[in-house]
Length: 107
Image (cartoon, one colour):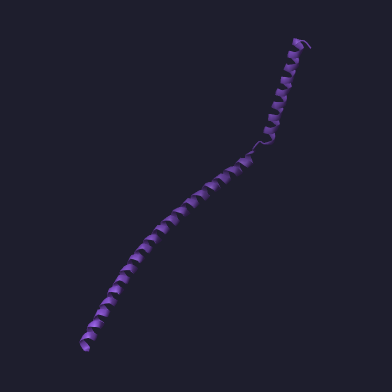
């Protein structure tokens, strides 16, 4: 095999490889082509996903606001409970002092 036969053989091999690659690309693109009905379905799915994300964001905002409100209510209730407990403690202490005073003066 001389030099020109070698070059022609390599050229034929490269051309066949190119032709096979092009055919494979054509076949793959033909079988995986997205038709118009699929695009419409994908658009509907994208819109539904977008709406679902908006609803999720609204739900998260609602939950955060509700949690903030409940935390404020809990804080206020705890403050009221603490004030009531202190008042009750003071009233018990005062009642005990009055009992002691009464017992001391009646006997």
